[in-house]
Amino acid sequence: MKHPSSSPQRFRTSWSTANGGRSLTPPDNHAILVSLMVPVVMVIMNNTMFNVALPTIRDTFHIQAEVAAWMITVYTIPFMVSMPLYGRLGDELGKHRLFLLGISTFMVGTIIVLSATQLPLIMVGRIIQGMGSAGVVPLCMAIISQIFPPAERGKALGTWNSIGPVTGIGAPFLAGLLIDHLSWRTIFGPILLAGLAAAAVIHGKIPAEHNRPPANSLRSFDWVGVAFLTLVVTTTVFYLSSQVITGVDSLRDWRLLILALVFLMAFVAWEKRHKNPYIALSIFSDKTFSRASLCSGIRMFAMSSISFLVPLYLTDVHHLSAASTGSILMLHAGALLVTMRIGGQLADRWNSRWPVLIGLMVQVSSMIVMALLPASISLKILLTIIILHGLGAGLSLAALHRASLSKIPNEQTGTAAGVYSMVRFGGNVLGPTVGGVVLQHGLDQALLPIMAYQTVFWFITGVTVLGIFVGWGLYE
Image (cartoon, rainbow, N blue to C red):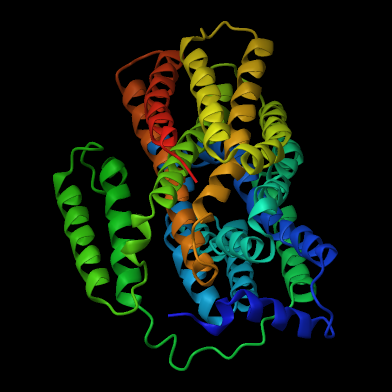
């Protein structure tokens, strides 16, 4: 069914009305593109600054690596599961409304984390943060895909994405300074300011769509599908890191695996029968969409694993301070920035396949080297490898975004962007969760820290190689 708010013509007409009757011109499109970067700043600041704070939080609360990984996982599960929800409701209720609701929810969660003195309450705040920030990526992607023609879409997505590494350059360094000289809690001051700026920009610069939501749209929405999907993801992650949840060794609690499979079968059966399903499974029949989604998930698995492991690696093996760790992460973000926009331009020129393959191959090469490096390696060589990984990861991102929506009808861009983002950030959930399990297993085996980290890097390498095989068949 084609909803009024999702029609490109209606979408543009309503924005034109909100701008005093002016028609949308290329400069208006680019102004919107710049405005959509601001909420991304909020999300990236939260992710990168929290990663720098993670070793300090781990030591403050005396927790193991698996529990430390859950500090990221409890944010990422609701972040991932809620993405299709924002995409679907954005198509029906309007993207402007959903944006403001999500940003407000994120700020409530941030205040809880900032003020919490106990680990469980910090976890609750992180969950609420994830629920609030989930709408940023799918809503931005849907808007960009609607206002830019296919020939310009890769470049536009690459430009929009570039704000992530720009933020990542300064945010880790700022976090390190705040942590070393004040407290890990002070990182949430700049994050709250970024949230206020995002709300102001979306309210003032992104015109509201003047459509009437379909009658009873929320009442008839597939909330059962949402619940089943949430249970599938949650029980799967519980199985991967069961030591923290049930006390049984991770990947050994078969009760959780069986429960996850039962919920998965129930979700598929329900979605097939529902007349307006939360996730139309037929969308995966588009091979380009499916391959781009899976490849993006694998890429994000490698990225999130590195983001989780590198701060701990630098602390445990090289004994660096938080400020020094933040500086190194800043260089990694700078490398992402260098190739991100280039990757989008190459995808517009060649199609998405080659930027994706080249980027993944560079990531694999850098992780192989990381797995071979001894603890005595100089920081200059280590920095070179981390920068190389960032260059590879940046090259494939916009190309994957472009490929995922290249064959999707305009009236389904919000839904498709939500599903793609969910699969993509599924890798973000699995990366630190599985990485934490493998790392803790190595440490429990009385391995030297460097040997435990080398084992994890080899594991990540193997998973990323699968992405190369998937990306090889990526055609548009």
